[in-house]
Length: 277
Ligand SMILES: NC(=O)C1=CN([C@@H]2O[C@H](COP(=O)(O)OP(=O)(O)OC[C@H]3O[C@@H](n4cnc5c(N)ncnc54)[C@H](OP(=O)(O)O)[C@@H]3O)[C@@H](O)[C@H]2O)C=CC1
Ligand SMILES: O=C(O)C(=O)[C@@H](O)[C@H](O)C(=O)CO
Image (cartoon, rainbow, N blue to C red; front, side, top):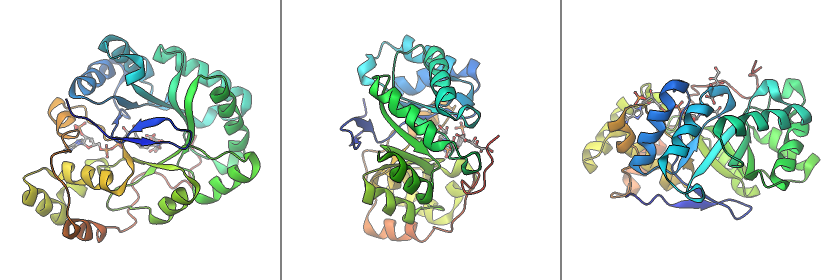
């Protein structure tokens, strides 16, 4: 079975560097899809209240027979549940759906600066952490300005910021900010949602050179960049392909060519303006 390396978060918790994303997997398919991922060797699963598949995901975790302490389960607080009390209530609902008594990582899904609630929301996450119901807490889609405010007002450094990141959106400034503050960068849509990135000639050529697939090249790039990646697939063959990353290494020439693909191509909403509702 593939051994996925871990990254040590700023509170000492180990997080697998490759996880499995389940956005757009319907709840009634999530059990089969997540079971396939666990069978392929993934031990980290990324869901969210907004994905409406925590129940099916939790069922796969329970049926897998994998000891709880070998799993790393992430879920996220949706935007309409921001605020201190609402967050605590939403977290209980997520735990119930997952069938767990704690998660490994709980994230604020989007900052929603216009709502002005993310600092209060984060204080509720601190409560959850202190109660031992999450092993680590963090944020998603926070820009450096949102992180600055959180640091100033709470004095607490999130363990993780999960952001859109792939070779066409390399996020150098965000990564540098995270590194300065000890925040782990986690890449969402690492495959560029399978929309074009995997057909880019540079990626295809590097794949040919190594006898690998374009998706494996892109995911290998994330690992060598030092970020966490959470590719999604609902296809058993691609689920296995996306974790088979540990028998080759991108060389300097490959990394230089991939660095040149950065064009600031955002596929998801812009956190500066996303109203989130
Ligand atoms: N925090 C946030 O705001 C966000 C978080 N996320 C998280 O990140 C995860 C991954 O991002 P996501 O947007 O799903 O996109 P990904 O970049 O993981 O791409 C998924 C798409 O690529 C296809 N695909 C997967 N593997 C391969 C392969 N080997 N070859 C060709 N095509 C492939 C999939 O199709 P198929 O299923 O048919 O294989 C699917 O259409 C999400 O599932 C979610 O957990 C995502 C968006 C926002
Ligand atoms: O998948 C996620 O985690 C998201 O937050 C996205 O779905 C996001 O909400 C979006 O793309 C809305 O258009």
